[in-house]
Length: 375
Image 1 (cartoon, one colour):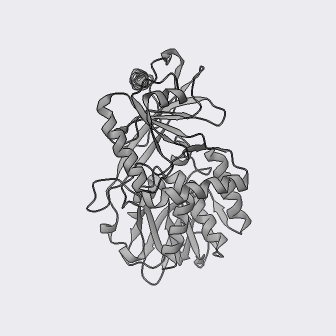
Image 2 (cartoon, helix red, strand yellow):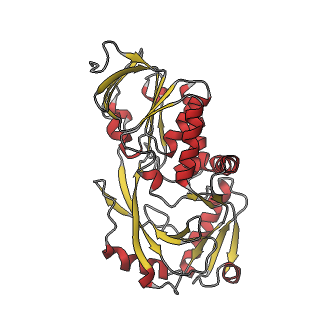
């Protein structure tokens, strides 16, 4: 590789690619541990993709298989996130969540979810009867529910700004509008060619690929990386609709999960306004349009558990895309940490499939990445 901006190649100890909530948390963790860190992102601002296009929910750790990375990281990550938000003044609300069954046939699914949560160490769950559920949310159509008091919501943008502030305060450097043009990885060194106003070549001893939707395309640019360690991926687009009128809820309301997602649920923003989503649409291209033609599907999905919903008050809001990876030999999607012990390149960690509960788990993910780099 040749440097256009300098006669000789510059060295920086650590490069983190991707300034979403996970990349920011990783950069903050590494910089705060004394490493010289450059954080780069192709966009003009931090967190413009998955990190700002989600439900902003803090998950309790209920749904995930016991041996999954999601289960291992969501539970500690949740508490770390609540504590961090309190310390840094980030808007957060532990409002709780109801997972509702609308038919007797769904009761068995509800009990299975309850059991999975208990196995994962979520010890504060309660199985509620129909009357107990209605006492919490009287307008629901339900035969029973799970109450999760430790679920909540967070202002994801303020969280990212706080992480960015911490990172910069420990000497970290951010370069936006900066794309990875090419990489070469080897056991003795890694070289990255970055493209911004021009091209700059950097050598590094630590490289963390946290690029979200771009993580796999970037891994495919790594000359010297065995592509057997780059998994297949599927992209699930989730659209959201806003609700402009009054509603009767002060907690999150989820139906039982659907294939590819957790169902079209009711979430709240920090001002208490309701929104619904996401649905699941498998896509190949990055497109964030929310067509009005989805309105009927949203209306009928929500009406199953909230019959009083006013269709006229639903309006298209935004969409996000989730990157879903299946670990080898598993039948569920999970976070994938591809580090030196797997691919044999010292100092290189690729993060794949960083979807929900990535926001909840971001601080715990950052600690795991640091541990992988430290061997």
